[in-house]
Every structure is written in C-alpha cells, then in structure tokens.
Amino acid sequence: MENANIDVKESDLVTAFMTHRAKLARFLRLRCGEENVDDLFHELWLKARAVETPIDRPLAYLYRMADRLVLDGRRGAARGRSRDRDWGYVHDRLSEAVEPPTAERTLIARERLTAADAALKGVGERAARIFRRYRIDGMDQRGIAQELGVSVSTVEKDLRKAYDALLSLRERLDEE
Amino acid sequence: MTGARATTRQEAIDWAIRAQDAAFDDWEAFADWLAADPYHAILYDQVTIGADEAARAPQQDVPSTSASSARAAALPTVRRPRRWLPFALAASLVATIGGGLALYQGRSAPAFYTISTAAGGRQSVDLAGAVRMELNGDTRITLDRNDPRFARLDQGEAMFTVVHDPKRPFELHVGTMLVTDIGTVFDVEQYDAGMRVAVAHGAVRVTTGGGSVAVAAGSAVTVGEDGVAVMRHDQDAHSVGAWRDGQIDFADISLAQLASRLHRASGARISVAPEIANRRVSGSIVFDGDRDAVLRGLGPVLGVSVGRGDEGWVWSGRAGAKPS
Image 1 (cartoon, chains in turn red, brown):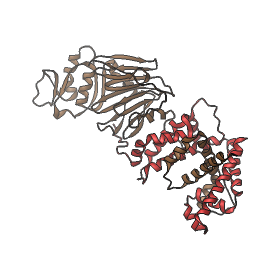
Image 2: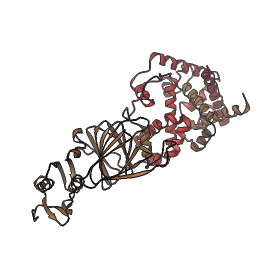
Image 3: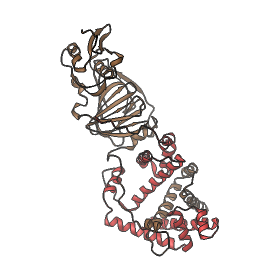
C-alpha cells in the first residue's frame, strides 16, 4: 500500500484563501456573474494550492490571480467559441485545452488583434510605446518616465489616452 | 455622451490602469466600485479586453525589447489543460473551505434531523430518490429536511449511491471535512477524528484543511486524526461497502480500528489491550451465521489472544493470555 502524504502543511496562500474566501468570491461574482463564479473560485483554489514559493502579500496575489482568471475566461469568449454544447462552462474550457482553435476562431482572433493594434497606433508612437512598456513589459510608471525622460504625469496621461482608445474600439465593435 | 457616463468611463480606465500595476493593493475599493453599478463591470471588461488584445497583437515596426515582442507576437494558443477531472464541480468544493460558506442563494434555513442505528443494525435511507444511504451499525447521520443534497456523518459508516446533479452536487460532511459526489457510489467511515473514503464507482472530491484530492473508483483515502494528512491507497471497487454483505475487508488498519468496525457491523463489544491497539492488520472477516464463532476464531487470523471479559471480548498480546 502506498502512502502518499498530500498537502500536509498549508501555505500562506492557502491560509489567505481560506480566510478571505468571501471577499474573493464577491470579487469574482462582481466581475463575471453568478453563473461562472463557482468554476472560477475552484480554479483559483487549485492555483493557490499549487504555489510553492512564499508570497509577500497573499491576498493581493490572490486578487490578481482572480483578475487574470477572469481575463482568461473573457479571452475565450472573445474568440467566438461555440456555446452550443450540452456540457457546461467547465467542459467548454477543458475541451478548449485539448483542441486547437478552429480556423474560423483564429481568424476572428487575428482580426481583433489587428484592430486593437491599429487603435493603439492611432494614439501616437510615444503613447503606444508607454502602453507596451506598462502593459506588456510590466514596468512601473516611474520607471517608464525615467526611461523616456518624461514626467510621471505624462506617462499617466499617455496611458489614459491609450486605454481610452482601446475602450472606444471595443465599444464600437461590441455595438455591431 | 452624458457627463455621468464619461465619468464612469474614466473611472473604468483609471481602475484598469491602476490594477495593472504589480504593487496595486486596493482591491477592496475596486470591488466596491464594481458593486456600485452593474455597468461598471461591463465597462471594466471592455477596457481590459481591449488592452489585452492590444498587448497581444503582433507588431513589427514599434521597437520594443525582444522578450516583449516575443510575447506580443504570440497568438492565442492552446491553453494548458486544467488539473481537475472533467467532472469536478466547484460549487461543492467552495462550500468546503472552512466548513460552510453557503453558496446557494435562497437556500432555506436548515431543518436538521438525525438517524441512528444500534451496533449490529442496518438502515437504508432514500433522499428525494436521488441519494441512497445504507447505514452500518453504530452509525449516526444528520440530514436536512430542506435540503436533500446534504448529509453529515456524525459517527459510524455509510454507503452512498448518488444520482448526479451538476447544479446541486451531494455534500457529505464529516467534521470539517467534505466529500462531494460526481455521480458516484462511495463508502465513508468515520473513526476517531479521521475518516476513510472508498469509491466503488465514479469519483468524489475530498477536502480537508490541508487541501483537496480527487478519489476515483478503485481508490480510497484515509484522513488522519489531524484532519489534514491524506493517505491514498488502492481498494478494489467490489470490496467497497462489502459490510452490507457481512464482509469486513481491511488493509493496514489498527486493531483498535478493526475492533470498532466489528462492533459496528455485529454489535459485539471488543476491548483491545493498549500495547497491541496500534498494531496494523490486513485481512477479511465474513460474518455468516454464528457471530460468536467468527469472533472466537479471530485469534490466529489477527495474531492476538481472544478472551472474554465482563463487557464482551478482549484482545490481548499472545503471551500469557487466557483463551475463552
């Protein structure tokens, strides 16, 4: 008989998850509605359990993980995936993991990305660069300001400009 | 665009920018903003999706670090497969954490009632036609008249046959531990501060303070006295719930635990000498007809001396024990 000792000691993240589960559930519910909160909460739990390194601010980390999970889910929706299955949400996402996107889905995805890129170009080179530094490279606003030799408030304004343009694009497209 | 809507748009953008920062720590205030108006969440989604797509768009002419262009060039790809079973259900799992976050809105207040069996007795309980429980002897189970998908095993052992309902998974509570069904036939035994779950068909998810494991047919898990440590072992699916046929199968359990199982199944009282109580034994005992004859004959099987005391049977170490 094998003895597999599983999860004997709780990590900080697991403790924080249990302590603040109501808040995290509330956050997920506000972001994505009653239907999906259970699945996402479960995923968040699994992810929290899988983290082995110590975390400085566990609750903030959990919120961020939750935020990313919601975005992941939204990405899936934006790809125009078919909803006509009998299986629920969980199965859709699982089967996405084993099937590559269909050609049509890839096309839709590409179009959206191209449109987003165009909108970003529209705000000017500096704002586009600042956006990418911030959003892709994860640099903080002060660091970006230093790198480009501008003030932090310029960085802030450019970021707003970029995000605003991208929001406008989504508002336009979602209305079609 | 009205002034109010313009303000809300700006708020959504500000929150999106702030939340992007690695050091962002104002999540509760953010949640409060989301709660203030359902439209806020919609707007916020739009901003973040928009930003996400721009971040992922492949772009050739804007200079950036090689790492970021590699990331930006990556089109949506096959996502990593999830770690859970295809039929794991989050709803029941959530309810387990800390024991009792009520997820279902509009659940009415519980109306608990308890069913008990005497040692050696049996009872079957059907709940709303969707859960069948077979209670072993010396067992106590608490149910809720207002919720046929809830049960709490206070003591003893029971076999569950559950018709799966994805919207309302069956939850079996054992102390602070939880077993949830996924269309299953499984057996749960509670002893001391621990429990054992063996699955005959389908799978269950067992959640304790230490984490959560899935247990599929052909497996069993034992949760220790600390309520946290989990040990997984094989158990032939056919032997799960064999007590219903008067058969007690055991693998690597203590004599004390075996004594309690035999008591449950037969009503016989057995006291075990402390110095051998933790000895591990494996085997199979079948009660067919003469209970006492079976119990008397256990000595050689278990490597103990079987004697009679004032209150029933006594098991002790072989040297110096009096046979009955």
